[in-house]
Image 1 (tube, rainbow over the protein chains, first blue to last red):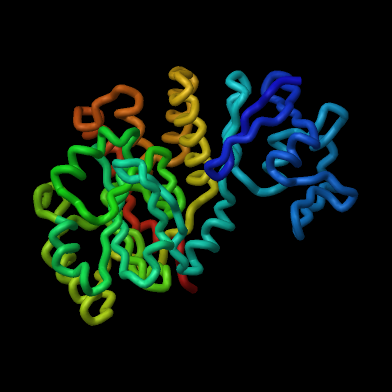
Image 2: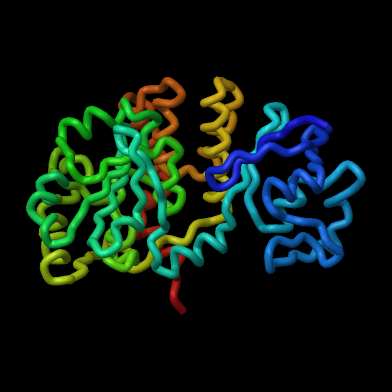
Length: 136
Length: 206
């Protein structure tokens, strides 16, 4: 068992993992603690949602939950660097497309030059011109 | 630029929020200080806004109304005509469109402005995950590993300039040099993807 980092939605989680080549198996306890997903008879569950796991034979064994199979089950993109013991769980394109189609402007909080955080939703009641630019 | 517009329209409930997709505050600082901006000027080192809004280039401009709804989706718009000869998009009509929005509520669009946000593809989302992984590895001084993931992100989303050009200063490459022109020719050869062209391709109505 070794410590493995999972980056997800701006958060950095440490889980316990067994790494064999490119295969990363995470203990169910540390996965649940980090990402909230729990292994139940119905499948992989979090809050009100359960994803059926029947038919995905190798996704979980004595060593733990296979990280790639976990991502596939949830329909999430996964960028892995096994050697660096870090992975980034991305966003479902379908879910993201749904959010953008709803017309709601995604919220965010970012710092200004003085490190003071500003949140988009604090500007409700204003007409906001959001401009992304760069020095490149 | 935006500061002037803010001074002109701020009392009518208008606020520009400028977000720099730069690797550190110091890279964005000269622009913010030169503008003497009193509107929010934020630093987005991890490209959070670019990812959440499905942005693929800079500048990208979005209009958000008082209820937090996107009323004019991602488009390349400019506040000045400094580089007009290169990109051909005049700032005057755009600034007038903003004035009209603020004073009358009109949402002025042309054929370069999609009616909806472009839905992302699975490869684009994976590219963003590769980018975030690369960025974190870079921050941990795992430079070679970071480079592999920046490369992978670029392969997955070749039309995303926030990845391809945005990674260049991080990797010690010059984003203004010959490599930029190579990227540009490559973009042209792939069909010159823009928000409008991607929206047309992906939001086909039957």
